[in-house]
View 1 (tube, helix red, strand yellow):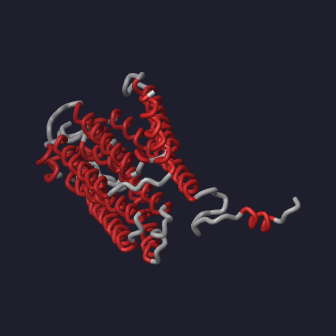
View 2 (tube, each protein chain N blue to C red):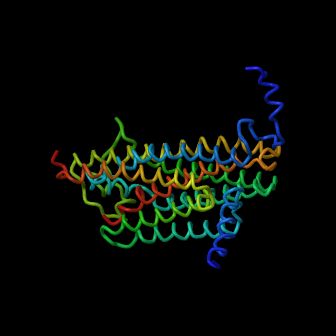
View 3 (cartoon, helix red, strand yellow):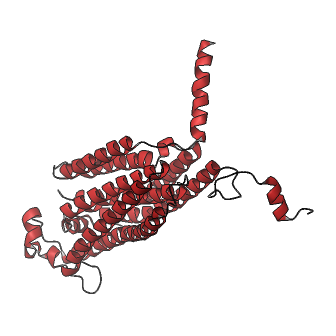
Length: 248
Length: 114
């Protein structure tokens, strides 16, 4: 009541690093609070992707033959390559956090650029995979074709590997649900990658100006959490979509 | 008495440990990324072996193992505060409870008969 806010502020003001906001007691408290907030955000992301994973589980059990043959259309080597690319990008991101913590500016810029390139590489491979699906009319909708499933021999590349038996027309239609979930899950994952890559581009410029190597690691650390989370989603998408139906 | 004095400093160190920011050395990251890449090779290899119902079980087990390594080391949960650990555990628990209850409903019906 008596003191103006500016005076009260001046009276209680103490030494702190320039990046510490005034409503935090210490820089460590600020780090913990923002870290906690980031984790809460990631929990909402778990729930969001969790719904998609649950839908996949239920529909896979429901329309099992359609899901098995749908997954035979995916190229296991592109999937494996992308898993390797993404895990490596998580490693370069983790190294970026270390560079930020130990105040290595050039190292941090290099790590962020490598993560950026690996992220783009992942999306590039995903584009190749998506274009295969578009060419074969395996995108759910009006132009969807069940030819590969009612007449597997018409799709020699897949047939020579799996020797699938023809599906009944009604079950063959259910492969649309498999591809719907495939595009929904990998598409939502790719959207997270695109957002991450955009933020990485911003961070590269800021890092070159020395923004994250002055002791303020919160931004890099929390972006790292986001990037690793996206990696974890892929760690589960890969076996569920590509691997588990190979022998069925 | 000697037991008590031995516990004292160790406990104090742990308190101190939580106070300051822990820096994970690059060697840890290198070991973890190597394990992750090897496990990726293993899960692809396992998918080529006919194991019936165990194919998805092994694939998911390897996935859970890889995700655990990422959470503990890349995401620093092993070195973070109790609050963060509790938050991560609460998220995992809620996720499993929601998925479990949803599946319990489906499993307790006759498939394709509703």
